[in-house]
Image 1 (tube, rainbow, N blue to C red):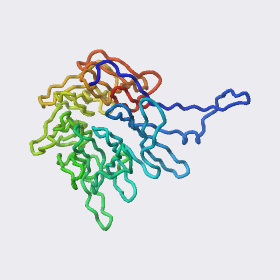
Image 2 (image 1 turned 60 degrees about the vertical axis):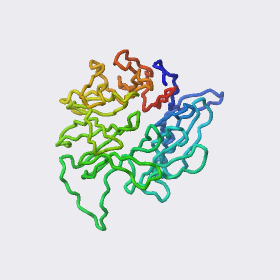
Image 3 (image 1 turned 45 degrees about the vertical axis):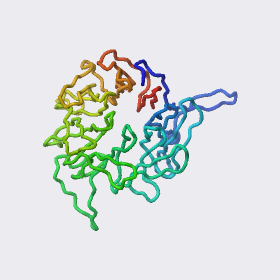
Length: 371
């Protein structure tokens, strides 16, 4: 169990330095060049092993000559020492996760003859990565169940192949999106997958996109985010929903009733509550502030807004293992700080602050953060 006291800090960060040695061995500053920019490496997605002895993370490098970018998975002991590369050069890998027993490190990648993104697994005893999923249209996200017996997968509907180019059919209010292109009716839904099976089991359906799915602590339910209003393209009213992982026919439980957007769900250790972010001021649209909220997981609609007077954006909330603390990223004056409050919303503390920005973090006995 995690203590409600602050754990020790283990922070990964990068410093941009430009120095040269003069004849006397002293350092002097020089201007950064475009070549220096392409030498920079980006660290992200830190995850601590269940025993707290290792942290896996990603490093992204840019190749100016090839006009390409590549991300690899690395691992490092929390007690120090050399970093170990876990994936090879030649393809990009991401989303590292540990199996609950710590025996496997998994990640997503398309590599070799596998064109679509799949989940791969590395045995910590050694050996090559083994393909774990074989989903025809690929996997956009995944997460291990608490017992480690199956995974949840986020899968987009399969597109029917055609021998000739098909015209774009515009039948949505939002017909195009940056970095996506023209929108269609193919939707992303929640699935479960048991290693060794040949097919995944679909849990959510309909003309709606689902995202940010997370297992309940007992592994029987999955919370996710979806805008299931009648005019989803005309509003930002995403809500948090729960589906039974073993019986999708039981129907969905709607957790939030807020007319604004609710997102980033994370379960309390006892499974009774879900902490998340909420947009309350719908008139501000994209400029509204994300508030910290806690909702009852039973669908009663009982939601509490914490620190309502705090005029700062909040993101990535998560409970400590003992349920006594809520951790989150707090935006303030151009910085992204790691902050915490008690589970009742009191005693705001800025744990990592200053002239820096938190990009991502994970908490076990230490806090692993990338800046």
